[in-house]
Image 1: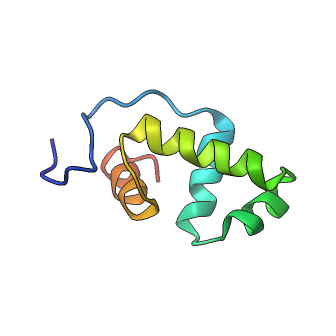
Image 2: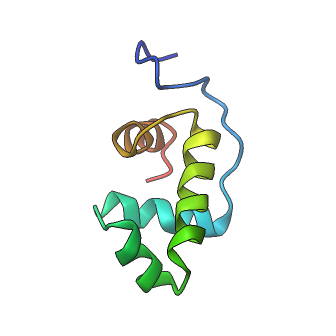
Amino acid sequence: MDDDPGIASPSPESLTKRELEILMLLVQDLTYLQIAQRVGLQLPTVNTHVQSIYRKLGVRSRVQALRRAMQLKLI
């Protein structure tokens, strides 16, 4: 386990295909609005997906999510 308190255990819930797609766009540093436009979703729906990604990865921020995704070799 990482010493960062925002990083959870090494076995998070699996991300859905859509969540992985959104995660890849987060890596590109796109805003939620840009992600919504890119994938054809409403902004609140993107926010819901991002919050689900954070919960499943056991993190609280974009930076923590990216670090965790790299640790898990998701990106």
